[in-house]
Length: 397
Image 1 (tube, one colour):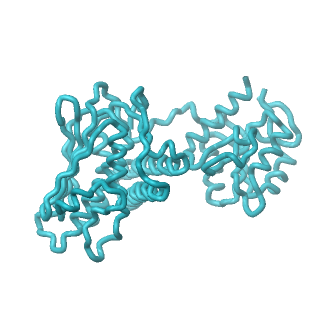
Image 2 (tube, helix red, strand yellow; image 1 turned 120 degrees about the vertical axis):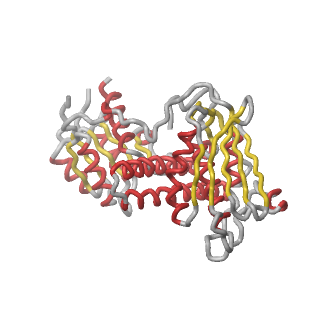
Image 3 (cartoon, helix red, strand yellow; image 1 turned 135 degrees about the horizontal axis):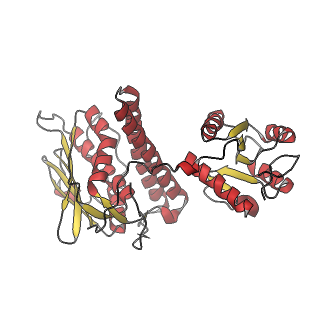
């Protein structure tokens, strides 16, 4: 039986089958600092793509185009979030979850992410796909790899000091490689690489970015190495072919797929994930923007929400009212810790649904019973709703 939270107490009533038996992980031979730099590099790439999609959504008058841009932004943020989680959890940094997926869906997603950025630099991004081709791997990781390759290609095209009118094309295509493998190909007509550069293309710390004054910052030298590690973790191989002065072609080969998984830009929202109408929720967060967003978002899901900016404010509200659920941020300001408020509320009502919102990489600093009541940051609203519903179901059993 659930108990309401408050001093008065009282009773109160993109792709299916992404994981498979082939899921596995391989750790990359990078040091700690290089691993963090590699993760930052990938997150920056993802967020840069999201920012361009924001610009598309802001400027476009076409509702369907704006909808596609928003879906791209959401998926890109999800990918960046997964990368950040990998920085906190070393076991996840090069973990892959393999399933069969349509290759065209991956190419189309990468093109949607990066075409605005390429066009902003006068570079044409061309795709050649076949809707029937399937590969087996981690579709999200493939998007990550192809994104890095296209950005490298964009650098190579921009590096041409005097670009001829007919130059400035990047092509992404998918095709059959042989009887056992399919491949993605990213080709550009940029500066190309010398034999010496090509020999070191996967070396950690060695950047393949050509030197071109005023076009961009120097690379970290980690993108190609990390990309190959991810491809290898999916059971694939990566090959690079380049001719100085003419361009570069990178091939990512993966095992053939046997079962088609229906692609989707974003997972469909489960309507059952709405909260019960009138569910009383207390949000405690000292960050005004986050607090206001949670109040608005949870209200749209059917909850009756109040908010507090500190533990003292929350206690004052709890003294007068009861709530079904409380979401409490771990850090509420100087010397104000959400975990202490969670413990106080559990002391008062042990069966209460109280969740601590935390982005801490480890939980060693939290009391055991608080560590069991978590909403890990960053989280989507769907995840928050699912966590609340699971917690309440557990209490009612």
